[in-house]
Image 1 (cartoon, rainbow, N blue to C red):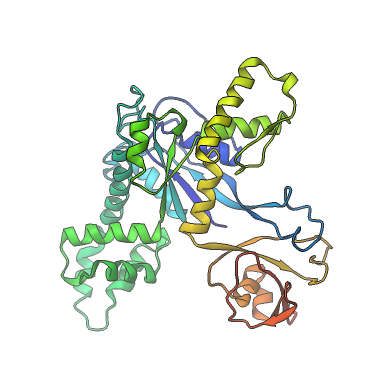
Image 2 (cartoon, rainbow, N blue to C red):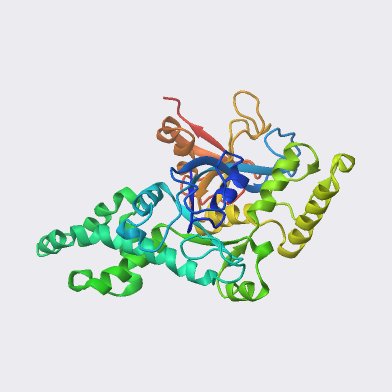
Length: 389
């Protein structure tokens, strides 16, 4: 399963974002290091279910909207010099090993300082927090590499030694692949065999961006002064209000409103049972959603998976006419796959035995055979034909 990590300094709204995205328990408070042990949960990315297009009745979606699960980790807040062990730094950084991408939550309202302590709204520039997290993580990776560097330099004197492969081995626990190392070297045009400390730091930063892609989420945007919002538009950010999303999801659970995560609006269905304060709160949220096109929480999840990680959703079925599995369930599975994946890749993702016995696949929409090296598209419905083993 794809795993997203929520990162940032303390008290910027990470745990609120986590709870809003997963509805899992997470302690929320206005002081630093509320989260000590990482919270784990399941969030969902949103896509269109093909059931309506294919004229079948599907029980796996909500009004034609399909939600596909992804793992989510909410880790302890990061403070300056965390890579040297300050705060809960080492624990924080170790928790990021299992993340495929990172949602960097920034307090867009400027109401928390670099340490995560509450300050007057607008008094802290959130742009400083954007650079700070990238620096800390880069220096953490540099610290790991520097411990191995003397040995790697000695081994690099051997003619048949691959320095790139050795560096990939050093970072294997972080999910770094050989292709990532080579891409970072190519991007910087440096020869690591001759590189000094500055080169290695720059290399680690580039490697971080490639192997742990990051999306900046400007949280508390509904409270942010206009001048801070203007400064953040220089970056590729998703503006969000995790507190608003959490309020909507709780109200929807209680059947007070009709709301599907990611919608730009909601509908009140039990207005008579709401207090004046609750109605006023919902109106405030509605105004904010009109301004930003939603609360930003679902939008951030979707962008991380579909843009940063470049994933697509594919629907495998056994009966290409009824779009069912062996138990008669319509469109039972929606699988996230890397763009460029093939029907053979899909077969292996469904089950190893199916992959090993792969014969061919059928594109359900065209009812035509497709080759094993055919590139799948987002939303494809595919029947795999294989030899049973």
